[in-house]
Image (cartoon, rainbow, N blue to C red; front, side):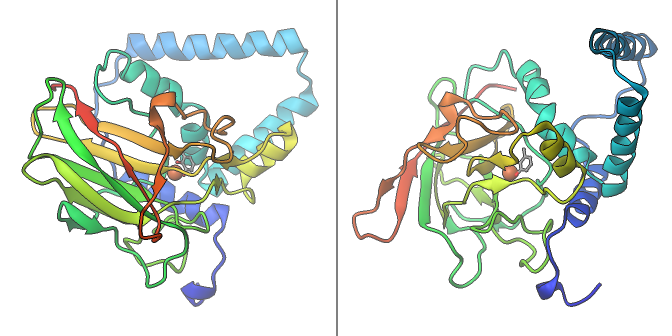
Length: 284
Ligand code: MBD
Ligand code: FE
């Protein structure tokens, strides 16, 4: 590796970081293998694929193109990206179907736990002169009954104005635009950050190859990632988007929901924009 400040952000580098991050994470307790369940799910997945091959008369050339591509996804470390862009939203839909409080959406491949803890009013860690319009993101965390949740944390992560996530692209400070805000005794928070730009997933790896081959685009709308937690309540993993922004209605990851669209207003002193968004957490 050469000087990190001059390295290019590549699909393979961010893929390797995302793979390493996923291996270190336990979203849920590791379940014992349920043979019956594996049998059912894999048999049905294969049967659906067999059906597609028959209906579309898939050729050996296409079969070999698929094999080549699947091998390359692994070599690029792009399984986390591929799965989170094209499958995770349905897993999230099933997991949170009965939730009454704030809507969640996909986590994506670029979460890193244990970001710096910050007080209820704080700026996310950022560089001097960090690019992008200043954004004040404020609100309150409450229970379904409207009780302020004083013990809550609002964890945020986001891309910078160039669409780069710290720890997944070279040259950024370790915790740039990542933080865990501890709310005040009224469940309130005021987070100073920048409004992110629309985000293009890496196109120089196998996900890019697929996107070009299928004639798709590679864009996600500008978004803030959040995890909001409070003792005795269900963790909400979500994202927030911006009204009128590019790709809000054609997100490559299909992760936008109407409840998740912010419409910030200009701050009176002309220093940026602000928006209020409250979180409501279901009981655990
Ligand atoms: C992202 O930033 C993201 O949020 C998702 C879901 C997939 C790829 C990149
Ligand atoms: Fe993202």
